Image 1: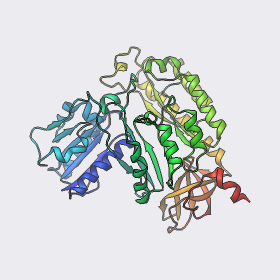
Image 2: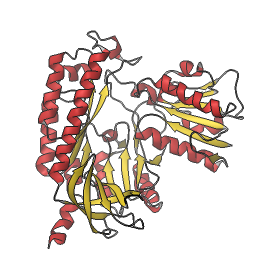
Image 3: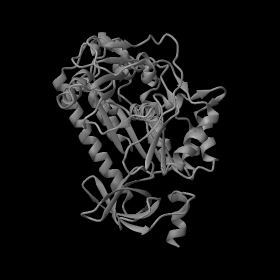
Image 4: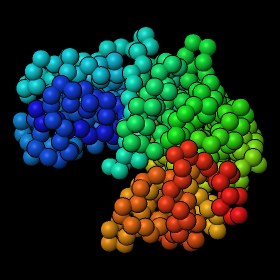
Length: 449
């Protein structure tokens, strides 16, 4: 068959789609880009994305207009939570839950269109097995996302993830380096460690700090980036290893969700505003060039104008680098859906816009602080019209610089000169570093001498 895939939601979903895609490839099928004629379409859905059902319907309609006989299978978090609702969408042939998403080929004996959709969704009374997955976010094969943890044991009042994905489970500790070596041999120069609750990694006696130390002392040459990690799980030990490492990027993404202690309590988050502030300031005290991203939810029930302003001014006061702003939307099967004092949707959108403006300001200020400094960048995309490369520095500055198209896509040293739009225009200082990648704190004295 010709099979296409469409993914909604987080990087973890993309890595899992990649794994499912490889299963089809190994079974002898051909993977085609979404939008091309296909015999089968698999959509990996998200429970966090707003209007997930509307998006799924649009994707299905678009596919069936072009290929009316395409077999349509739906999986992912939305499929686990609302299988009957998804099965009622015109054109859907099968729905696969969390436990079933990696056994689609085993579940189906035929991929012929169904008059009555089949539902392969089991309850998550027991924690599912851990399934390996990794994916790339660019065609340049620069950056790979490796899932080492899945599921969540937390009970945040707004979140459906524990219901959709089940309890926390982790990749066996002894497999981590093997998987990373395989990714590196495939040509990737950056590996991002991902998970639903990454800091909650736990396998036998090993915890996330053990993973960080293992990688730091390994022969892995790709640079390592940590994806989102909960503030109560980002310990001083982890921070110290990362910021003194030759392998890890000085970049953290740390969810806050609200700058109001009262709202944090209603969300059932596991930290206080004062603890979050102390964490951010301690990181910046260790390395002022560290990039810090923040998640925040706007319009949670009970968020009055005063409480929103509390969040706004708290974020404004912190030395952070950018925000990911989410407009709160009610989710079935969550305690927050029953909370009183709902915030009007129009107010939620206005607050979202304000925080996104603040994010642009914070990012611009962080970029300004980097001008005149030298950074390591992995070239990712080439613009032939401008003979210009784009890539990200170790501390997550989006950089552009002129260089030939045949530049080796390995770590290169650039001087950050000026801000142009969303990028920092830079000058190439050296084609690339040695295979043993070192970060600025190690190589800058040598370059300047």
